[in-house]
Length: 346
Ligand SMILES: *[C@@H]1O[C@H](CO)[C@@H](O)[C@H](O)[C@H]1NC(C)=O
Image 1 (cartoon, rainbow, N blue to C red):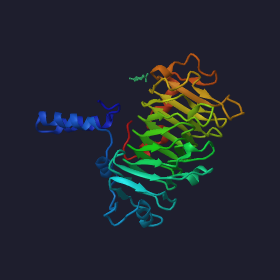
Image 2: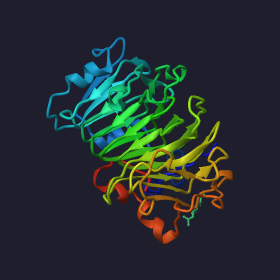
Image 3: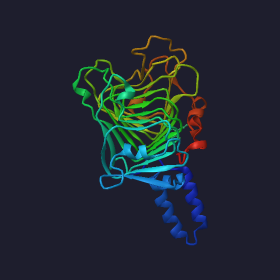
Image 4: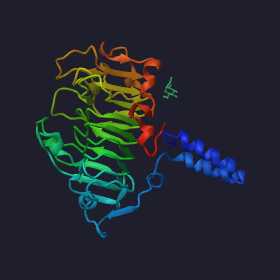
């Protein structure tokens, strides 16, 4: 199956290679291969140029992910790779604020996973993986909070798979699993490329300034509560730079959800060029649990497709963007990505 996302800049780079290649045919075959993939571990490794690699695995110097993170010096200033061997890495992992410039590299989201079982009434405390440091890149890891909260009839029990509160944090080809409150995108500028995110209620939430390129969002039913779940709950309190932008992805699953729930006066979420399956309900957006004004909320859709993209019965305060309105959300500049991302789609 063709990948939904091809990297225009890689294609451009490959085109340059063709011009330079002595044999045209050889160049063309290289071009075809390059354009098949988006961003992978070797590409990121090449861009990041770390001097040191700490390896985590049962037969390696570091047996747990946390022990490798702990070995990174406080106040770190040079990129360090923490490489996770394929397999299941159990235990809570925290990258503390004083350990920036870590590249957590797995072997792919289907091969390397970090799993922890933890439920709490506090989102942060429940998180299986926490990034509090700035400048962190993650490639090819699945994050799972396997707490069996589905058995407890209490939606207040949190089981966050990942909490991200550092600035300039990027995830490539990762996956996030939890019944609900899966990804706590708390604060800072973040980039998620080709990531899979699963949940039911408010499962991408927080006040981050984040771009989700080619996300795969899977909705799982949750019978513990009568309200329909919501994919996002973006908590923008004032007119600052935060917000969630979803580009060129797909939303599908079982059950019914809203694209977003208003949680603050300036909540901002945009779905653009996204396939919305029937799992997205007709109203699209909701104010459940919120009593403030919807005058300034910016919950919008632009150029989406699929049976869930019919906007005829959307709540009146949601927005349908024109090309002009959408423009500022459609490039990596929304998170100033050109200044800090090792690789990106646009
Ligand atoms: C709308 O989305 C399609 C893909 O679904 C894309 O090819 C097209 O360029 C988009 N149109 C605009 C105006 O962005």
